Figure 1 (tube, rainbow, N blue to C red):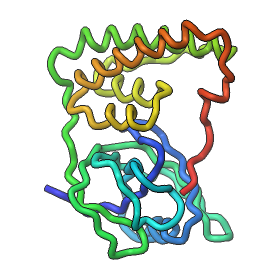
Figure 2 (figure 1 turned 90 degrees about the vertical axis):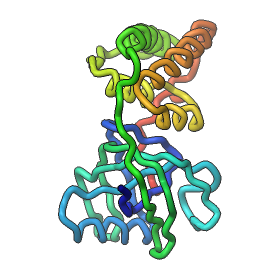
Figure 3 (figure 1 turned 45 degrees about the horizontal axis):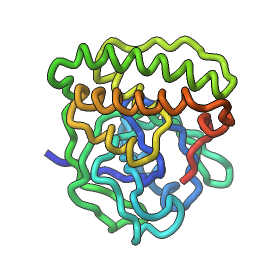
Length: 220
């Protein structure tokens, strides 16, 4: 079963359960949110990573990732000049089957993907949790920051997405984690990535904190 979903191409990977604020200033995305607001809630759009191209400008040359994440709109603030600030939360993952360019903004015929724990995720979750805690302490040390306690979920699916969103990785690695078939495969990949990042952080004397911290709102 597929659904036609408005798409928001972005240079950031969205994971289920994570909050993503967006600032909409291009007319096509103002139209997108106005169209959504005319429908019954929940208001949903699809965030898809950009493999080739840019967030702003013509979408004709965009090459998008094959898997994205639904962003449920939980707050809309319209500005007097027509721009919107919205708050979204990641929901279901989907695979893009077909693009529809019939409107000013892209739409995609998407197929939703199941969320499964996979084979024996418990030991993988335990090891990934330990490496993630070590990663946070080492990151805080090189960034001269304070580690705030994090309540890590027991559920392996939720844990896998929290780690995927929190670790500083390039877009291709983030996309690979989003596309993992189940939580066990995602946690196994995260174990290897965290082991690598911990080795790198252990060898750094000092790293500018700004390299790791990104609290900005993503514009379109």
